[in-house]
Length: 155
Image (tube, rainbow, N blue to C red; front, side):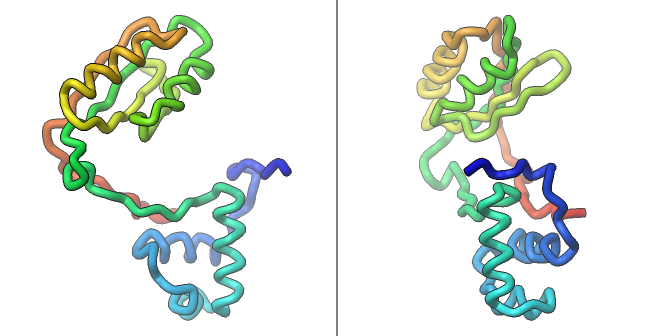
């Protein structure tokens, strides 16, 4: 079964409110969300299930990589030779890549990586440089995380 793309779906105001409730606290009960948005617990459960199945949202635990032993994070700017989308797909398959986008500007692709240490980061950079379609890379190593939030709401 092929799911419709998120952009093809109309998200009503109630669903947006449910998303915002979960962005504030992903463990909030369906009963509490229902009370806040004016729906029954069952109706909230059904809407959340549809939002997840249609890939409009996902509910995950966001961790602090430093606390889990991943001491090196970086954003890697990648210039592709050709087939930017295919190259990005190959990069996105790497387990160390947690974010990968096709972009404009001096880089065709941006990939965020989380690594155990500097040697692990070097291995990942070398792996990316070896992927067919990668022309060059530019690595921006994170020295200090000042803000990381996922509660921007639905505007």
